[in-house]
Length: 289
Image 1 (cartoon, rainbow, N blue to C red):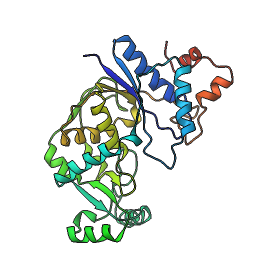
Image 2 (cartoon, rainbow, N blue to C red):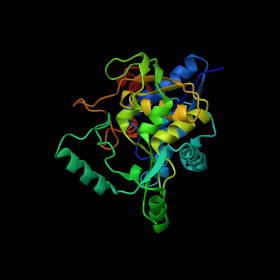
Image 3 (spheres, one colour):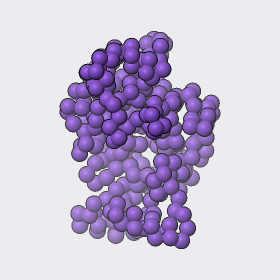
Image 4 (spheres, rainbow, N blue to C red):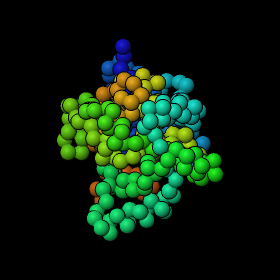
């Protein structure tokens, strides 16, 4: 069977050199190995994703000489599949609703930090500090019927206990040089959000479902997502999905050593193109032949 690679951007801004590097690595790997290359649009964030950014993704990739199979999978068109996955996890007793607002959670974290440093996840975000997992079924149902906003969280201690030891095959390199057989530590992320009242999925859940349904065999992505793989391996195990192998690559940094980001208004590919850059120039800038 041919290897299957994918590039999965979110249409919440214009692509920059970091995106170009990842897309070209995936496309080159598929072409060199006689594999397939898929494009996926991760557009579950309806507040930030826009049609003009999706159109720009197609334009930028085509300009780089990248071709992809059609039809393109858009996450917003598959919410039912993600909802079914949450229901499967809930049927195992691994999901619970939490009702605190972000402000309330921040207050709880501050209270705990006042006594001792509250743990953070690998991205530096405080772990969930609420006590919703202790609510009775009757209390949860009453709050939901009342219309309270909620997030559906994975009960990490239960899930971790059920899964046992997990790991993945790393063909690339983690931030500290990890490669080969890597042990997964999903507990470092706490009770992660799987879905919300208004959105029946999350990044972690969607990417696991999508990769499995699309038959992705090798996930090539940036090192900033290296430790997210721990959560992905846990979800794959709980949902009985075959895991791909992973190849995490170096990040493209700006002049101050920070990862390129849409949020910091990194120079976009369209700006480079408008200034006279060529696809060959882009390859040179990201260190590709």
